[in-house]
Length: 206
Image 1 (cartoon, one colour):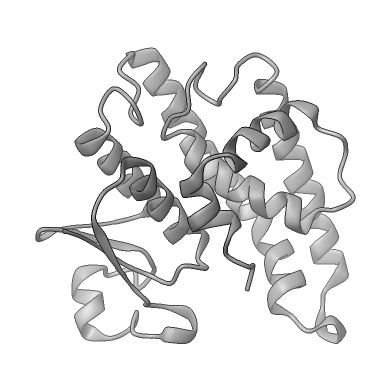
Image 2 (cartoon, helix red, strand yellow):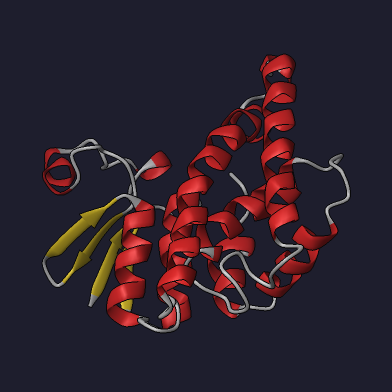
């Protein structure tokens, strides 16, 4: 059985759990990191030297880095579906998964500033700068989605998962952004997916 080590309110853990949910795989998730701690303990560091979450244990095969885990799960358990069979479509899915790293970096000062920092201690300049970059990048995604139903083409794939998690956060954190109709159309399809609702949008930002 798959074991995922990581707290469910981590965006990186949510990517992995969403992929597992899409694939319908039996699994166990163990709370690690954040308020739960444990990620700096020797036993955890022996599995994942970064001390970050998540870590995947697939019957003794240990893997960390969330996008790598999503790719692994898609290749092993969802080849031809979650992992696109067509090499060009698969490459496009990988492209957006890698691009998501920049989106995550833009989201960090906004998330920490608005969610993890008391109002009287917020750095409003840093939050505004982060929002501007978040909007700039998400607008690129909106433009791409004008030409396809999903990020890699006409079907949902692993490429939608990392960017979908951070788009959920975008709509929660940036309430005064521009109208992005293609992004909203795509996001509405994600909201119809039970695994997304269970592992992403159903979990409050904390």
